[in-house]
Length: 64
Image 1: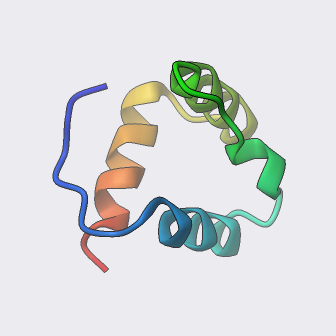
Image 2: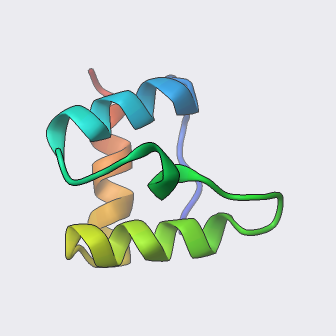
C-alpha cells in the first residue's frame, strides 16, 4: 500500500469506517505490531473491496 499523508488518528478512521459500514466491528481493526497487512486483508475481504479501493477509502477519510 502506498504511503499517504495521515491527518486523522487511527481511532477517528475506525469510527468513520464503522459508521459508514455497519458490518464492521472493533475486532476487525485489531492487529499486533507487524500484522497490519493481515488486518487490511481482512477488511478488504469483509468490505468486498480491492486493496487499491481500500487505499482510496483511507485516503478519502483524510479529506473530511
